[in-house]
Length: 368
Image (cartoon, rainbow, N blue to C red; front, side, top):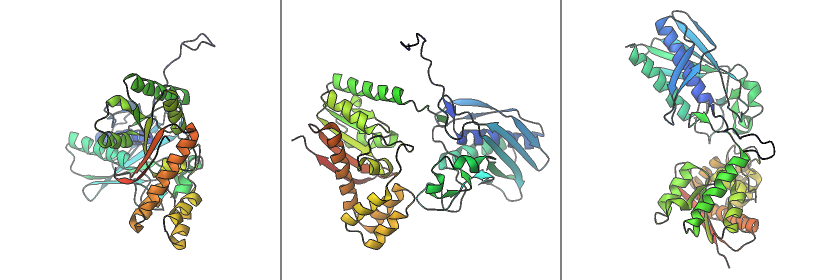
């Protein structure tokens, strides 16, 4: 209940990712091509297991190609792609197999460090898998033995991309087709903070004095493997709210905190940025370059870091060049920043892992 208005709070409505939209339109277009009938809806299964039916606003077809279009719904907390037209064109190939590419408004990768190889359309791994599986399922359903080509387009994608970090990441010509869950979870700061605070309260009430704060699912899993002796209540997914989570731990008498994250977010924490959402603060490559020099990197290597497109790529380079001390230093900076945030009195440990879930470095600062 919203006490100020007297109205009952409504739950925020989830939206759907560009990857889910692209999958739905690909399925509709291929079905139209096979059946030679317009398809005005498409039902797909999302990575989280939810089955969803998408409305198709346009479906055109000939004997050799078909096109289907849907409008992206970002839910109650829409991002830059909310309302975008997502189109899939499907055509027959002379060769067997499924070819997937990006058309107008879908960016192309020009720099390393992203989950898609340089030169390919910026369609991330999970959406690629979703689209391929949906297409294969339709081909199997109708017992079709021919190869198909799928091209995903976003007519306004190039303009939309100007509101994103794609240019900095080396993705040119449009947006990325994204999504790991299939749904867009509304980014409600107040609601998320409330859930973090509640999780910490539960942990303390269960007798936890050591809490493991993670930035997401993969980092939480690493923490559980790292501290198998801790009860499940001790593991709290703080998301981007590092400073808030630390402060809540301090207020509620937690004596030891372990922070687990990856290069992107923790490179910001190391500089004292305690709210690390991608829109709140960019990665400071000058800072990473200086830390690399402290760890023994050459001036040439430090200069290369200034031109990197992601913090993850910097981490890859430092590991490849053999500067393990870089990650120890970065972890120590995170501990110091956390210590300053809560004004001491806690044992703070920082653990940085790679995107593959491997330990890169760690550090710890005591309560004394």
